[in-house]
Length: 114
Image (cartoon, rainbow, N blue to C red; front, side, top):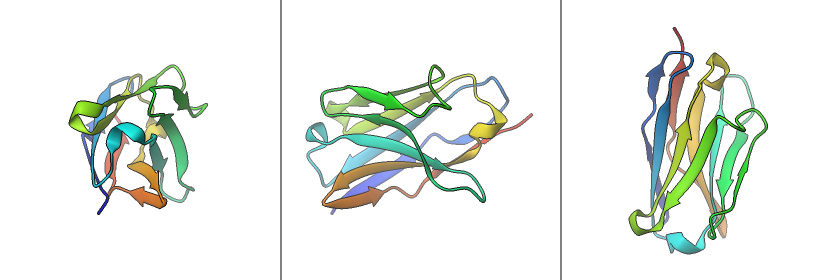
């Protein structure tokens, strides 16, 4: 079955950086587009970034120029490098893949606060 396991969240000060990882299993990872979403308390889940199987990327307007999505097909892993973090980036971050239906990881909490 498809499994997505995120890691790398934590508490960071404004202006700091974090790198999230998501390890996928149960799919031919190299053939799938992958995505990161986030959900802040009381808000809808929003798209953060996507990366296609060929490596092309897309970003939500609020993270452009600060976040970078990448993938390592040899490790079945997608990454989200987050720089210049702001308090409004505080959310639970989820890894996502579409494979017949949407699959989600368990989420990893990112808190940006001084």
